[in-house]
Length: 222
Ligand code: TIU
Image (cartoon, rainbow, N blue to C red; front, side, top):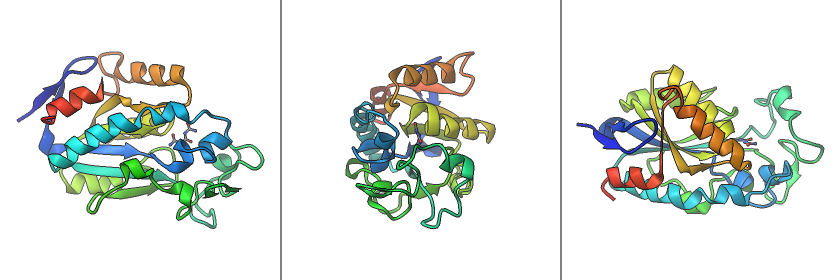
């Protein structure tokens, strides 16, 4: 039985038994001073606004025993899974693999690669390590979702227009229904955040739905 979540462009028919919460890249490297995001010249405080809304939905999802998946963007220590094109995106001293205050930037196993303590995964919640912006590229996420019978994704995390959007687009092409949390996603650029949300649900919901965290929490029974 589905329950409707108040959303744009129209109500989202939540099928709780087949829905998963996917929390994208809430890592110290993006959210804390001294990480990759800050090294690229960004103001990380914009991203921190998403923490409390995500925590609220996470609490409700766990209470309902929904599948919760966490992703982390990062690379092998020898950077053998890092395309040259991606490596060249950062400036000198702020490239993936460079040393920063939280260890080597976006390298698996380093402190900065970890998920922020406020949203730490618990036992049984899959953590997907992804080398790309999208969570489906070069990962086992699709297999895990199919095995659990998941058809709907509630997407949260950072940044709205980069890893969240890429993942939403990948998910769409794989047949998943996607709902973006409008206050549980964030960008270093508020204008990009707004545009990314608007374009997802324009044209009758070309990529999916957009809803505030409170509407999702309410649908999950508070
Ligand atoms: N997770 C994610 O969005 N990775 C990025 O590099 N985002 C930026 O906005 N730079």
